[in-house]
Amino acid sequence: MSKFGHKIKWTAVNLCRLLVAVTFIISGFVKAVDPTGTLYKLQDYASAFGYAGIVPDWAFLIFAIVLSIFEFCIGIYLFFGIRRKMTTISLMVFMCLMTPLTFYLAWFNPISDCGCFGDAFKLTNWQTFLKNLFLLFASVVLFVYRLFMTRFISERNQWMISMYSIFFIWILASWCLYRLPVLDFRPYHIGANLIEGMQIPEDAEQPEYETTFIMEKDGVQKEFTIEDYPDSTWTFVDSQTRLIKAGYEPLIHDFSMISFESGEDLTEQILADTSYTFLLVSPRLSVADDGRMDLINEVYDYSREYQYAFYCLTASGEDDIVQWCEKTGAEYPFCLSDEITLKTIIRSNPGLLLLKGGVVINKWSHNNLPDETQLNDSLDRLALGQLNVDSATMRFLKLVLWFCVPLVLLTFADRIWIGSKMYKRFKHRNNLLNQLKVNENEKENCSR
Image (tube, rainbow, N blue to C red; front, side):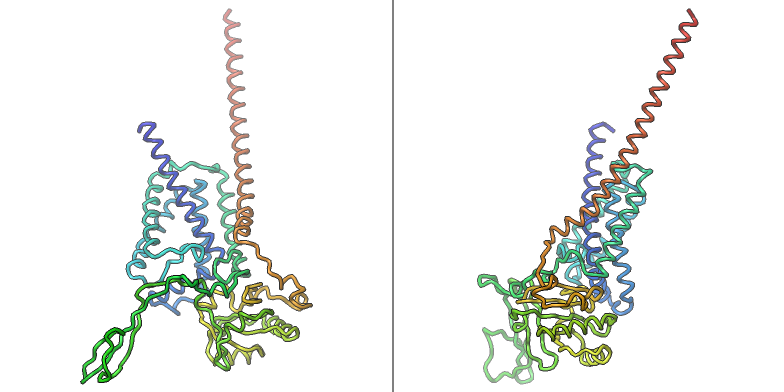
C-alpha cells in the first residue's frame, strides 16, 4: 500500500471512529441522566410488541442502566482507541441487532420515536434507521481496520480509563435515579412557565381536520362530509374526525387538573395562582413509594399553616385513591390528569412540585423531600421557595468538567509515564553506544 493510500485509510477509519464515539457517548450519557425515562421507553417497546406486564419494571430499570453504561463506555473506548478488538466486536454485534429493529420501527411505526437520545434530541423512526445504517457501516469498517485506530492512552494503562468511565456513568445514573435528572430536557423543568408553554401564537399554523358523517337511509349506510351533508331523510349513525394536516403544537399540550371530587377543571385556577402551590405527582398510586408519607403529610400540614394550596395529581382510579388515603392518612385533595403527562412532569413516583404563578419553582424526588427543619418559615423567606435556575448549559458543563478533569489528569499521567520510559530507553541506548565506542577505542589502542 502506498503512503498516500495508507494515509487515506487512516483518516477514514479515525473519522468513523470519532463520529461513532461521539454518538455513543451522547446516547449513553442522556440515558444515564434520565434512567427512569429510558425505563418508560422500554415499557413502550414492550407494549408495542405485546409483552406489556410480562417483564417486571425492575428488570427494565436494570437494563436501562446497563445500556447507558454500555453505550457510554463503547464511545469512550473508541475515542481513546483502547480495547480495540473487544470494542469493535461489541459495537458491530450491537449495531447488527439495532439496525433491523429500527427498520421495523420505521416501517410499521408502533412507537413515535426510538428514544435513542431520550428527551434531549427527538428523531423520527426513519431518521433513526438512517443513522443506524451509517453506524452499522462504520462499525464494520472499524472492526476490519481496527489497527488503524490511533491510541490516546497506552495499552498498559488503558484499564484506568476503562474503570473510571464505568464508575462515573454508573454513579451518575444512580444519582439521577435516586434524586432527579441533573439535566431536565422536558417542558416541566425548574424555571419553566407552564402558562407560556401552553399558549399558541395567533399567527401559528392551525391543524386541519376532516369530519366524516356516517348516515343511513332505507337500510343503506353512506359517508358524507360537511360540504355534502344530506337532508333530514337520512339518519345519523356515527361520525369520524381525522387529522389532515398537523399544525402548531405547543410545548405543553396535555396538562390538565380535574378535581376528583367535583369534576371541575382547576387547571387555569391553579396556574394563575400568584401564591405557592404544592403538587404531589403520582402517575399510579398503586405502585407509588409510600416510605416517605410522614414527610409528605408534614409538607401538607405546612401548606395548611401558611395557606398554600396542595393537590395530589394522579391517573389512578377511585379504588386506588381510597386505598391510598386509608394507608397513608392523606387528607389533601386529589386531581386527575393524564398518566403520560404525570410521568413527564417528574421522574419520581411520587414526586413533589412547587408552583408559583404557573412557574415551576422547585422539584423533589420522594427520596429528598423537604422536612420540618427546612420548612420553618414562609416560602418567600426560604431558599427552597426561590427560583434558582441553573441553566442546562451550566449543569452540562459542570458534568463535563467532573468527568473530563480526572480523565485529562489520567491521560497526562500516562503520557508522563510513557515519556519517562522512552527517556530511560533512550538514555540506556546512549550508554550502550558510548560503551561500544569506548570498547572500540580500547581495541584500536591495543592493536597499535
